[in-house]
Length: 226
Image (cartoon, rainbow, N blue to C red; front, top):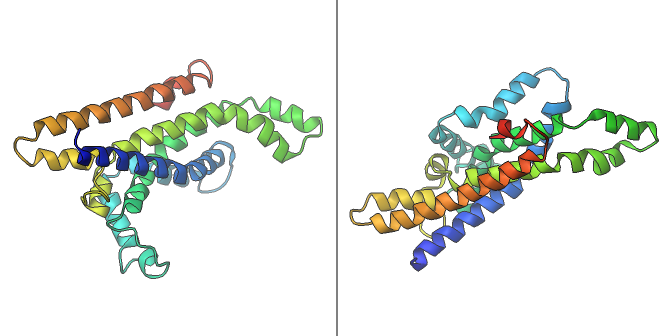
């Protein structure tokens, strides 16, 4: 492994880790809202949350360019500069990972026996105490499974990332982008193989951990997470 390849791997881990940390509270809030909420427009919200799964990643990257470009609302009014930076790669990965995270967490929340929460309320426990001592611990396997799935999805993110932040060595060149770049140069098969093996091992490990966590949600539920 060359220093450049180690740099690519470490950057991918940083981007994926930040993407998951950014998305985790948002994903859990959306999952709870979709699992427990009853409100007009719920179906539309559900569709919007899962839109990145079916939308071409290049389109997602293009929308990020519009929003966070120099003339976009976030770029002009909020002063956020994410284009061509690793933070922009983390944002793109977070958006692409969000649907998988929400789905895993939502299934876990829906599997909670609400009679336990009702019994705690009957015994005088406050709503926040019921959430912290009963609901959250019971939903934790799905929350962790969603986080691991999001990490795996972020590791493999390519289309939205390269469209939004390009391919800059040491700044935005993650594993998929590095593999794509190496494929354009004849004789780089060894580098492609090494990076591909690392990507497979990271993704496979994350999926196995996610499946083990998902199985803790109960029989017959884990298969629906993936």
